[in-house]
Length: 235
Image (cartoon, rainbow, N blue to C red; front, side, top):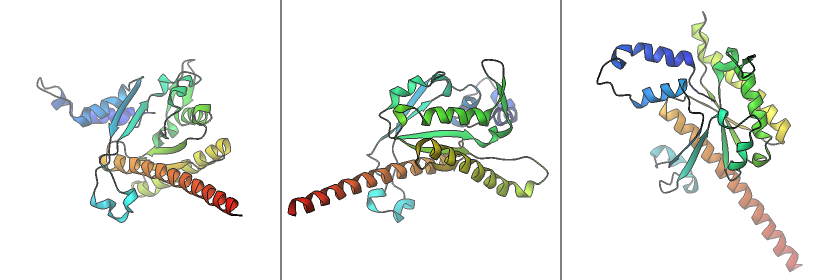
């Protein structure tokens, strides 16, 4: 799902119309990000990254601190590349974590589907989410739902932060209940601002911690089995 709305992209490029129209213009990284929001790739893209150690990780235990030699692969899948029945998800049965992105501004935005029916974007995201979490290849995978920031525009401008927080909480509870009803498991949720590097970094680190928690649970379970085996053999 796109994290940048059409309106945000339009305003961004209109404000920079003079600069963009120059002959020697070269797009910046931010220009590319906003353009991606308008003409999003319908395919699959991937990149490798690592978390460089920073002083902010100092409060963590050594096992949780960033290891620059540890590489992660982020695979971005556009919804249009999944097909109607999400058959392509069979290719990703080896993934460790699924990040599902939803824009909070979709709550009152609509689009025409392939049948020409006007559909609410948030409800479309919900249906896609249901298909993905119910897919056999991802049945036991951890999911992190990322909600992009919500910036309401109305007369109560002083209440924007509080309103945005309430909108995030409301939708987070809705999706968490839906996920639990479909899988019986816990959905992890985090807000993120797609065009702010620190926010994206925080969201990815949160995903890393989810993976770490899963590893710790597995190790604890294996240790319990070992202890039970030792006690049984001793008896």
